[in-house]
Image (cartoon, rainbow, N blue to C red; front, side, top):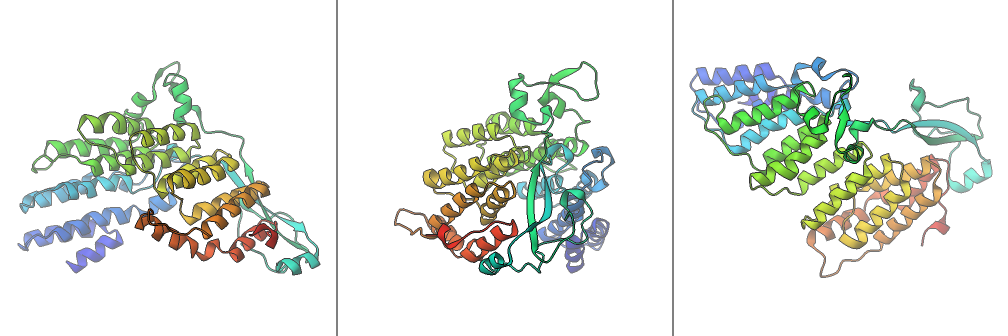
Amino acid sequence: LRLLEANGKAGNIGRSLSLLNLRKSRGYKPTTKEYEYAIQSIVSAGLHLRKDRNLFVDEHNQPEIDNPTRWLDAILVNMSGRNVPLDTWTANRMLHCYACTGRSGKALHFFYDVKRDYMDVEEDDDEEEGVDVNVDVGVDDGAEDESDTVTGERTPTQKLKVRMKIRPQLPPFYKIPSDVKLNREMVKRRGKDEIFSTKLEWEKEKDWSPSLTAAFAFADSLTHGACGHAPIKLDVSSWNTLIKASCYRGAIWRALEILNDTMPRNNIEPDIYSYNTILAALARLGDKDFMREMLTAMTNKGIISDKCTVQALVDGYLNAGDISGAVTLVQDMWNQHHVLPPYTSHLKIIEFALATELVYEAKRHVYLIQQLMKWKPSPEDSNRLQKFMYITQRNPKLSRKSLQQLFSYFGETLTEEDFF
């Protein structure tokens, strides 16, 4: 069992399945843990795709781990041969294998390039600001990509200045749900002359994503009894996993169909995770208009937003280039719903504002952070909110010194007058 655990964490699928068959041949009593480790081996093996997936390669040419059906079937056969019943929890773990290999190129778009250059500064000013002109802040000397390189040669009286250049190319029309909706959901099929269909019909075709097609086929087989097991009923976690798999393959309309049609038809109410998954997918495409519609739908259904909701909204606004809108959004969500994004979103807003030379917007968000630092709990506040604010107020990355260093990295100054 310990060997099975080690191989499962290491992502050795073949050895894990061999150990399962060895335990079966020796008549060992089956345990839930051994199947957890076998499923974990598939998840661990997909780590390199999550980190280093080649987005420019078609999904048909991706590694075999992108479609783990044959290994999941082998686990089901082993369970059936040892009379181990399949429960919903184990089935959900299996479905998660289809959503653990990262996003494909259909689900992503690159909105900006990072430019690094040197700027002239006065030595006296640097001494007052505490900036060491002899130290490069965050320079990658081995960078070769011209979109993220240091240009020119540096003199002793210069320091690094980081700027962001927004790319003029917007995501393709068929990627953005709000644009497709304005065109009555009809799109021209790429690579096919004069063939129009709804985006949902296109996403449901097998050629859209073989792994996504396999995920829905595997889920359907579970409901009819797979590999000798009794049929199971998919729960909210099962459908959330299929929503995640759809979003990771750029099939947002298929995810919306599950959210708005399939789940209600099966008497299952979508939860906050259902909406957050779709919001995160929309944020990758910068579709802030459709995100606002989703937020309104959540509010009307009484679903309470959480930090992941605000994080997704902020990412969408920033990708769309609406820096001031992102700052206002965080303020509104705090004032109206008492919910904040993770601290990384605060830093991301400031970084985007400074990199696009919107110093006023960066300082406006610093002002909000100062207000949060002076927040005090009241009896009406929940324990969860109090705990979150306790951690936020004591986060060293949001301290005065850290914010000043962040501003200096972008060649700007945050003085004492900017604090109250």
